[in-house]
Structures are given as structure tokens and as C-alpha cells.
Image (tube, rainbow, N blue to C red; front, top):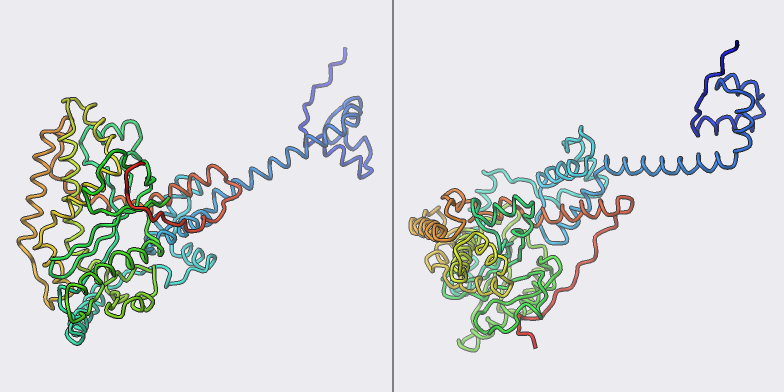
Length: 481
């Protein structure tokens, strides 16, 4: 009794190869011997030739697509470049360390190559591929070099003021910074809930704020806020004359050249003209800018009003040396966060954690503008004056009074949190971290990374360039008609 031939299952690729053998005029016997099939099976394959070809070609297309996707995931350069462009579009100062850190983060989140290290060789190739020069990214200036440059700038700055006979009350500094306007301290029911539900985005809302004040502390311009919330329906049924904060709406809540020029012409220069009307003869003014604010041509700004000189810090001097960054903005952020807690305390009617979370959720952009006004008004005159020692005094001065104000702010926050439901466990280190939360989050760069990662996940085959800079809304916060 003869045994039955063992059944052989051929793949589509093997069947297609048999058809190709016939196409090359190879004998039927060679195909039978190669795959161990019967003559009847061979004929069935011939009969199904059209169907086999279609199946093979469709699977080849899918295979090519899968390989393409894998290549895109492994090669993160294009996605990192999109992140870099978005940060540049939002006038974020970029460093070598920023690029390396975000490249590793993007590669990890997109499950790229486990061997990717974002090292020096990769960085050099990345910069060459996208024509990124040393002028496009900042290197860390050695401390000794920066200190020497800062001393030289101080001497030159003081000499310039004397030569031009510019009084200190007419010397201003302008800086813009990011504020996470709804963030709360760790170990509060709001943060605990956000983490447990993986909804930390609720605490990551941010605005850009523009601050400007003079060297004697007697003149503070209203704060300009740039947020994402539309102007029209932000303020239903409120008295907008209650605060001086100016609000502009922009899709990414970031500063751009149009908004800055509008601020300079319609707020700063208008305040100068007002002073000119009050004082005769005509006085000279100076506006000090950040050396990272690549938003304008200084000569163009100076040409708008010859009584105003606009200058920026030298490249080798850290932006942290300018007065606004030497205590004024940090003081403002502490005061803002105290105002935020006070507002929630006034509004809460129950004593449960849910009541607390509901009050936090209801804090609006109008509230933010009001809180900014209150906080800016409460920045101590001593801090406004002493912060200018960074560019007006040739020796380092440690202001004990400023330290005492900082400690008083910390104690006030701890006192308030003890009285708010679900916030009793908040301790000193939580408050300290809260005061400096923007430095920990680096929120704009983080948001840019989230955007490109999401865009890649939505459409991994075709990542377009970032959109052109969106024009700002020129509207001021007003009531709904």
C-alpha cells in the first residue's frame, strides 16, 4: 500500500517564483523538484496566475510602506528639525544641550533606535544636513569670559548714560517671559488628580508676558499678555477697566516681531511722548533689550523716535544679567501665585477636594489678567531698584531685604495652603519648586516637542514644514457685546 504524498503549503512568494520560472522558460520538472509539489498542484498554480500576481504585488507594496515607516521612526532627524523650527518661530533661544536632550526624548517617545545617543557625531551631521550654524544656537560662555564681558558692559553702560546725560528715571529694561498661569504646587489635590488621570495638560496652560520698568522703580508699564484664548468671549459681563493688563490673542501664545513692534510704538513710545508733554526741555531715554530677542532691527526702532536709544546686551553677557531677570520677574511670579491662591480661597464655598478642583477649573483668562495686574502692582519698589545693580553697580551687592521678601512670600503660601481643602500636605520644597516651575518645565520647548510628535503620529509619511507665523490679534480685552 502506497503512502499519500505529504501536503505542502506554498507561500504567495513561492507561487509567484514558480510563475517567474515558467516566464524564464524553465522546465516544469525543475519547479516540481524545487518545491516538492505534484504536477496537479503545479497546474493549479498556473491556472491562478493572475490572482497570485495581484496578491504578491499588493503585499510587496505593503512591505515597502512598512519599511518606509520604520525608516522614518529610526531616522528622527527630520522630526527634531521640525521641533527646532517651531522653537525658532516662537523666538526661543536654542542651545546645543536643548537639541540633544529633545532629540533623545523624541526618539524615545516614537520608539526609535535603542542605540540612538544624540552624541557629538550625530549633532555635527544634524547641523550640516539642515544648515544650522553656530550663530543659530548658543554655546555656553565660560564663566570667566562672561564675568569679564559683564564688567566691561557695566562700565560702558554707565559711561554711555553719563555722556548722553540720561537720567536713571528714563532708563528702562523690557523682557518677555513665559508664565504657567494655572499651575499649582505639588502635593495638592489638583496636582494629585491631574497625575492620577494623566491629565497634566490642565496645569500646563501658559501665556507670554512682557514686562518693562525703569531704573528708579517709579514707572512700571502695564503688562502685555499673549494668550491663546479668543478675546471676544473671554470677558462676558466684567468691568475691564478694573485692571491695566493688555491682552492679545495668538494661536501659540508666543511673542513675534509684529506684537513687539506694536508694543514698542503704541505703549512704550506713547509713554515717552506723555512724559515729553509733562516735561520741558525734551529728555533722552534708553531701552535695554535682551541679547536673545531677535525680533527687530535696533536701528529701525531708534529711528521711530530720536529721543529714545535702544540697545541690547552684548552676546557674551548672559541675559540673566539684565535687571528684569535679577529679581523683578521672579518676585512678580511669586506674587502672582499668591494672588492665584487668594482668589481660590475667596471663591471656594465648600470644604472638599472636589470643591477645590472645581474652583481651580473655573479660573479664566480674565482672572489671569486681573491677577497679573495685582501681582505687578505689588512688586516691591526695593526690588525694582536693587535689580538694576546688575548693570549700574561695578561690584556685586547682596540685598538682604530681597531675601527677607522671598521668605515672607514662601511663608504666606504655606499659610494659605494649610487652609485650602486638599492642599494641607504641601511643604516648603513644593512651594520653592512652584515659584520656579517655568525653569523646570521649559514649557514652550516642551509644547513644541509635543506638537511635532503628535503630528508625526497623525501622519508619519508626510511631515510638512511648520506653518508661517500667525498674525496676532490687536484687540484689547473687552466685554462681549
